[in-house]
Image 1 (tube, rainbow, N blue to C red):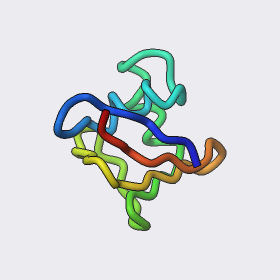
Image 2 (image 1 turned 90 degrees about the vertical axis):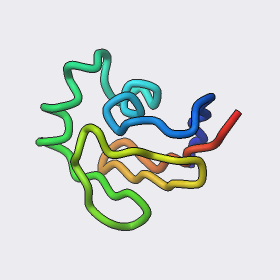
Image 3 (image 1 turned 90 degrees about the horizontal axis):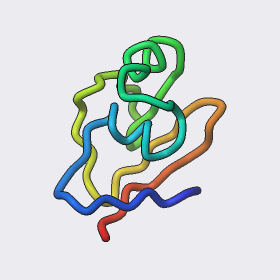
Length: 71
């Protein structure tokens, strides 16, 4: 599991994907979310604007598991 640290209260899923090196640009998030299964805390979610907070676990099929941590 890889830790992804944020300096704000939350991060949107679309921004998170960029920080986690799953996509190169924020614009690619929409297409990435259509093509990949993403579990947030064990439940499927593909909303680009979904807010992720410290402690959330994100599993991306083919990319691994990530944990949101605060700086």
